[in-house]
Image (cartoon, rainbow, N blue to C red; front, side):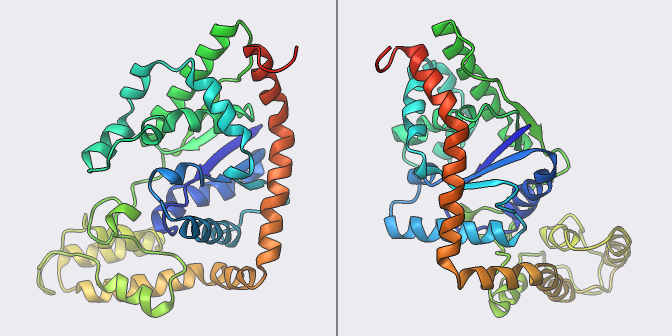
Length: 322
């Protein structure tokens, strides 16, 4: 079974990325052939600085490896190391209905957030479809909010197969991560690089402590009962056992628990939880050539898997010599 997913290097990875995707990607390695890519092509819709893009790619690769992705068991590659993906995206673009792209929720959300529309942002789902379809992926782990992208990919694949009368593409099945809640940011909204409300796993200790202490809470005094639906308690709960959660939330609802105590404990728990990964990441960062070798080998192995699909799509469309 082939399992595919990617993550965009549009900013440094944070708790939302870890609990929402990266942790699951590592766990899924035992279920089949994991194929994971750093989506630097996709980042071009938001990052317009070449050196910053390269830096963010390096950071994200280090994060993945530190979090337990094993390049001997899984394939980890840089999206732009397979430029043929862009050709496949063009083949798919020519059969993608305009209305399908106009209905994309993520596109509407980005426009509502003030992003200027361009063709890259609009056609983003087609490139995503190419990422998935080139490997004839069986499972694509996504959150519930990304399910539409998989449905669009299946629609696009079906349009191509129908247009050329060949079953070139396998229709992938989503692996919905139902158990993953939306990780709140320090301001209570969804944790997102674009909101600048993130907690990064591998920040220096003092920076992490400062960010934790800045988590927005209400003005309820220490002695009064607390609203445990606040972001602070949701974030703290990510690092606590069931019994610990029940005990602390009971204290909060009763009154007498200060937000500062919870924030300090959250920072300490984060530092302990990520300490082994932090040490591994620091070691990997001292060996940049080996990290680049991982990407180079990943691209080679990914290319071997995609070659048959690229050739089949070109042949079906009548491109190149017969």
